[in-house]
Image (cartoon, rainbow, N blue to C red; front, side, top):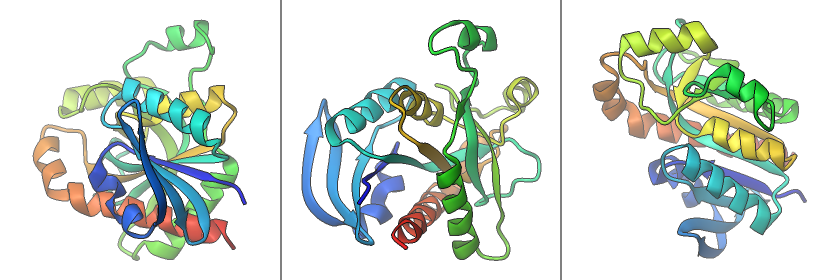
Length: 230
């Protein structure tokens, strides 16, 4: 059976998954924790990469190199950019890109990718998981997710990113995970629950909805594993 690697940035985003895991062993590599076991009879390796692109990239490569995972799911929360998004809505990555790297730099420098495409199979599973899990008051969308090393919390910064990259949401790890997965030819998907709107009120909204949205994204990931096993 194929092994699934699941990455979150923060322990709060991983909490529900760990609670549902049959843990076989726990170890640390370069300071990153790795939990090896099974969820819904699917072999999984859980890890938290901490905040930011470099941490995410390092952790993803360690996950691939040491555990030979067949798929990667990045689960967590994000700031909404797309106008129709509501708090607690879900964004499934169609592709991921960087909002703090120039497009020309991404195009001309190795690996010559302006964006990194998520797995169609994992997107399909994610959509089914959302349909089975989300209440009628919440929606899911498939769209671009943009990553950078800044927490976006101003309307002006939000509008600049919207104009240049047209993402559905912004966060701080997904494109780095997708980048490394692409280099290693490992299929991936990023699942994000909207915790704020990346605007002038983002910090207070984030604090209020961090726990709720972290759990929601994890619930979607649990359902993906259940569907993966069927």
